[in-house]
Amino acid sequence: MIVSLYAALLALFYIYLTTNVIKVRRAEGISLGDGDNPQLRRAIRAHGNFIEYVPLTILLLFLNEYQGLASHYCHILGAVLLFGRIFHNLGIVENNLRYRQIGALSTFLTILTSAFVLLFTPFS
Image 1: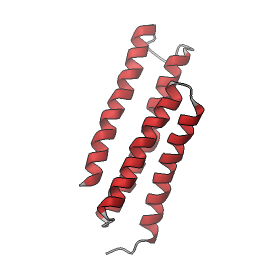
Image 2 (image 1 turned 180 degrees about the horizontal axis):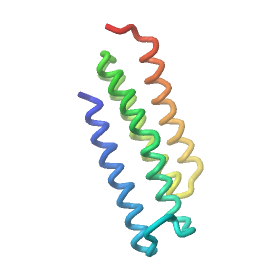
Image 3 (image 1 turned 90 degrees about the vertical axis):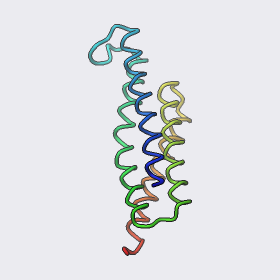
């Protein structure tokens, strides 16, 4: 399954985001909350934003693949999501609004496209 590839890649990226939070917590000696530390706050939000959007999007991609969406479209949607999440993380961590906008737009585009395909594709 194609979506399995993107789910696995995104899972690895999630682990990266998690370890980034842990790394900043250890370096700054902050065990709970963000300690009013901007770097930790950004790492926490990058991690949190990922988990807020990716599970639903992966589910939508899976349903599209399950219902027979052509493999090249599944690859495009998965790649746009992965690309978007990487850019979104860079935008948050590096405080780069342009990267964050690219990431958010890519994620929203994947969600919207997946939802519309599911709504307007006849069930088999």
